[in-house]
Image (cartoon, rainbow, N blue to C red; front, side, top):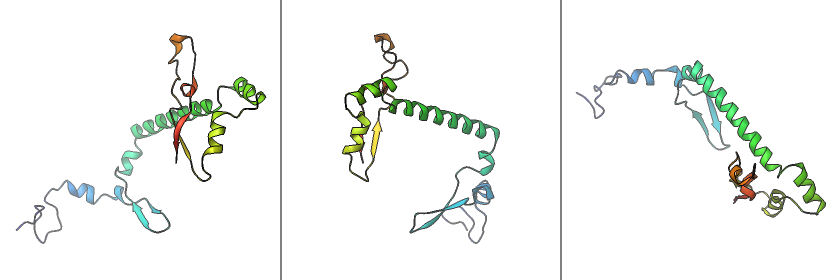
Length: 144
């Protein structure tokens, strides 16, 4: 006699033997707990630990870390607001930079999610004689 899953009634073995690999693997055991202050939940990895530590995974991780660092450095450069010369010119005129103005008008405790920070970069306007145009010349985002 079999149940709706096709497993033999009274048997602890599933009808598909390949499921034992997944169900019985210690690689999928919870690695740590997540606690939001109210509930503590175990985190279960969807990829076995053995796959996370192989050479391909390590190469992917190394590449992703390098890409993250490159992205962070580009965003930092954009947030400088056009370089030291532009910053000095704004300060001499008694003006705040756009991101400083945004910081002043966003409600205290709220955040500003900037979008398009990398628009206009990587020589996008090179054919027009513009080497780089940080943020496409504007600061856009959502106050949250």
